[in-house]
Length: 194
Image 1 (cartoon, helix red, strand yellow):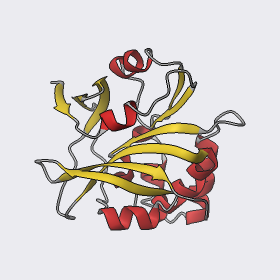
Image 2 (cartoon, rainbow, N blue to C red; image 1 turned 30 degrees about the horizontal axis):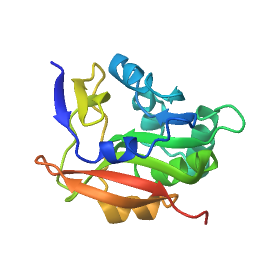
Image 3 (cartoon, rainbow, N blue to C red; image 1 turned 90 degrees about the vertical axis):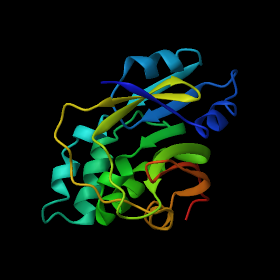
């Protein structure tokens, strides 16, 4: 059954959107109707990656190398030449990648970032926190719509803030807020290129 979840951090991203600037958004999940409707108020292009059903989640369980995972992400992220995201919605997807896969994700996504790229994600304060099998949509700037997914729950690899910024070094965490269930909601910005 769908439910809503208040967000105190996401409005900070939205209020920084220049209405005169064409916005480029990466939504790591599926194209949910409320998210499409939310972004229809902006002059923007939203790229839906549907990564929660991507083969990389099974690939990382095998004997693939980090280079092979990077190659897979690069192929998956075959966005048009010149694409640079202003906003990335990672949700809790980064916690479904093991360390190798997250480093590979970082290597593939960095070509689509620019100095003012911002991102939203969920991480954990402690490693015993679990992630429900759910998908996220944006109902309003301060309210997410949460739905259970119809796919099987994938193994998770929860990431604390410190681990996340070490493995996803293209981003720095700007703000974090502890949620009642032990997850952390974080806002990130692109770090200077390494």
